[in-house]
Image 1 (cartoon, rainbow over the protein chains, first blue to last red):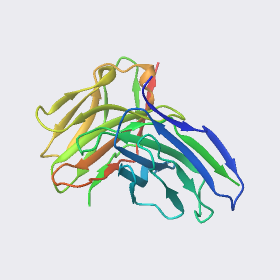
Image 2: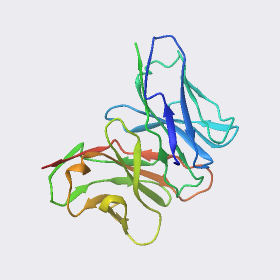
Image 3: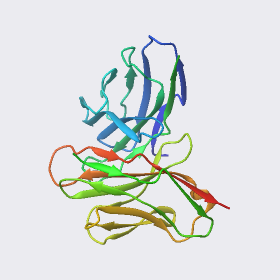
Image 4: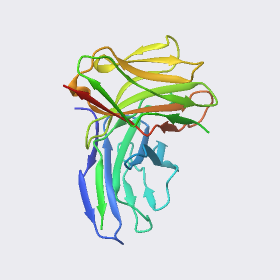
Length: 113
Length: 116
């Protein structure tokens, strides 16, 4: 069963703690992305990676970090420096190239109190 | 800078009636346009895309979209709405005109409510 998975589905953390969100894909895609979704704001790009061991900041990278040590995996760490971390986080992957659509995971809803 | 506008936050349509969800875009190069659908607490699912060629694009679940270059629009349509079509719809654009990484810009989404 091919696809992209994210875990956990719901995550609760106390303010000041770092938290890592998992994203795994078995679609053999080179490109992977992290988006943040807030009500009424659409999707905003946090980080993207076009190839293993390389990643770039998106529009709202402050307070986040990523790694891309394996083609299949692109974990996102939400650090304590992120001012407003409560949100729905979506991971996606695609074939490299502008013409290709993105495949999204089911998302992780992070609540920080 | 590229942008996408979805002018309607919500569209209500009766079951069986045709539906339209509007999208306009701005991009400096060639527009690559996409529609995605999102059900509550789920990820986005790809519906269809326009890259080049025929202006009328057909996609999943009976949806289609018409690319209009002069009006810079890419409206999503379906001839007969189903209650199960009720969801959040996102239009997205990518600049296909140059090399290197081209980011995807998403609209803010339109909630489609199909009334039984």
